[in-house]
Image (cartoon, rainbow, N blue to C red; front, side, top):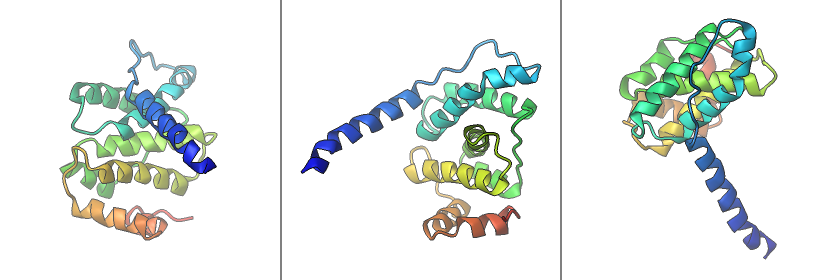
Length: 171
């Protein structure tokens, strides 16, 4: 009975978190010259990653472009976050523009939320789970055999094996 009373509370929390992520504002007049400049925008990078994960690829196209530009500019010069791309990740972009930036933002978010972690496998796992979530939500998404294989690997509990095989990263 107590559980039934908590359901509306959890529902409200979910709606508030989703609404907050959808209200991300791209910072204006971003200056990225020294390490302190990058540190100043870390919370914005996390918020941008959350926004990209929750707002469908086919909604707010102009804002997606702004967010992509901000995230990319920050990642390229960041002294604390590095993101590696390979052909496998780039292939996801062929059918679904935006998945690669969601992946990159997911990598950055993981590093920032985990005390500047150097654990490459954990970073890749987190970023791949972000693009899987977007893909599975299905809004603005085109079917992709390679993404379907990734989703199946994750659902089978074999994401680390997929990463080792396709991204050549293991523990």
